[in-house]
Image 1: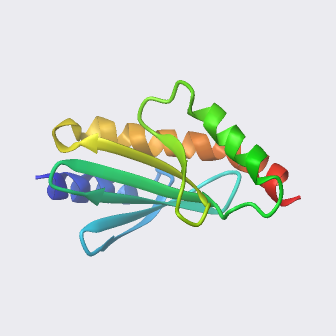
Image 2: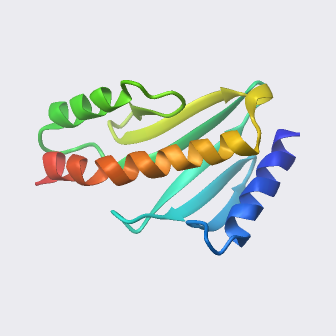
Length: 135
């Protein structure tokens, strides 16, 4: 059921000329959704359905070579008030956006909200993270 929902909604995003989603591909059980952004070329969002949860993740920046503590602090502060999507670190110290929701919660509106929140977080934070961690 979740697989069908993802396939239909992602197909709608790609087909919509007003959508920022320009490409999608199913890779195994997961979906890679590529959306154009204003502050960078694009962001790829991974939707990974499981038996009980839908996991969503978007890579934002690699582990910062400078002032990593400041970058991570910014991310933690941006987590305040987040409802569905939060800033996290992967095992390599790269900065990602993540979400995990119950399969029973998944619907068209929620998928739109998750994608929209990731888009908004990248738009409002990416330049700051790059400035602090890479310049």
